[in-house]
Amino acid sequence: MRREGESTAIQGDGVQHSDNAEPLDGSGRAYWRKFTPIYLSGVMAAIGIGKIAPISVALRSDLRLSLGQIGLVASSVTSVAAVLGLLVSFLLRPLKPRRVLVCGLLGMAVCGVLGARSQGFPVLIAARLAESLGYVVVVIAAPVLLMGLGGSARRTTTALAVWGTFMPVGLALGSFAGGALSSWYGWRAWLTIAAGATLAVAVAGAVLLRDAGSGVAGAGPEGRTGGGLRRLLRPTALALGFATISGAIVSFVAMFPTYLHERLGLPVAQAGTLTGAVSFVGVAGGFASGWLLRRGANIATVFFAGLLMPLGAFVAFAGVGGVGTAAVGAAVIAVSNELVVAAVFAALPLVVDAASDIGTANGLVAQLGSAGSLAGPPLVGLAVGAAGGWWAVGAVLLVGCASGVGLIRYAVRGGSGEDGNHEEQQAN
Image 1 (cartoon, rainbow, N blue to C red):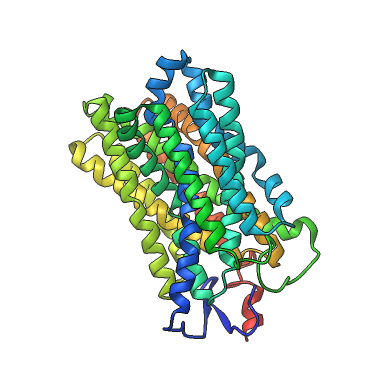
Image 2: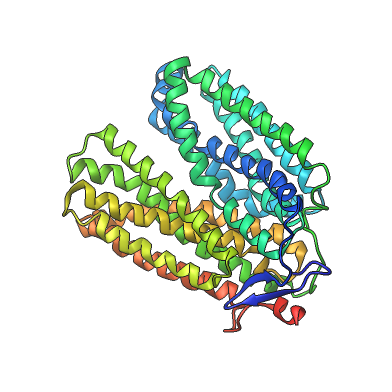
């Protein structure tokens, strides 16, 4: 896709760049001013996923919940995204992305308050399921809205890459803020504060994004039409590759604290803290990905960073060298994961044949990525049990990440060995 009046080119294996230099006036500041509430909407959506974990013990005690019920409450958001991502993307196509984003945030805020006031499992799980719909709406609408902000293709690529960091940032904030605020004021206060912050972002979005975006179909020309399911081939390949990467990082986060405690003797609390800190360090990879793409890096080459994840896993779960060695390997996993995740979002406009397909592609990424997050930990756990050793984590990640990198590169290279996609011909 290409905006009218803007000369673009595909460098290397598929990254889109603008031949026009970005202006040095206030237009850049205006762009990032609009980007801010969109990014914060993703962060608040991610906080919605992670806000239950730090209060799970208090919830079990106050509401007399079982471990299974706590698990359902904590995983409901990801589960709904894994089931409804693509359907929601189709339903949202005719709507304006700004209204969709704001309504999704408002829905999350209202449901967050209902959850904070719940007196038992039925109301709490109902509020979480409804909040999950708001999450799906936000994470599907936000990248599409970014595409409609205007600016150069290089700036859009950078913005999409930075957007890809919303999940680890939100999860880290939800974990740390939730732990601190709930210990000071109680879990109900924490959920209420989170809902209030979501409402504030919704208001900011309604005010700052009044003239942003023209529709969930995205800004720009429609491109080629027709093709039916063939048009979804490359978006599906991208989403499947993203699923393997998502499954790998969630499996690492799930397994690493247990490994640190059982194999290296680290206390449970310290093991959890170290895992959270390493996950947050991974955010640097997302911003590094955006920096690399902004400077003209080959996006298909950036995806090779995914092969560093199993390498880091072999080091982290080797059982030698102590906690320090394990932490270094874990940091490699986290940083390389975010390098790939950020590049996946930046690649969205490169894998579609028409602007109207961006929402669908994003829905596929949201749905299959969530499915990978759900399927990864139990599959890796089964492999570790069958192999009788933690070394199996690296082996499983090697198979998964290698497959994922191959699928993603297939998507961005046009599926036939071609460099880029039809945009290259449009630019010449």
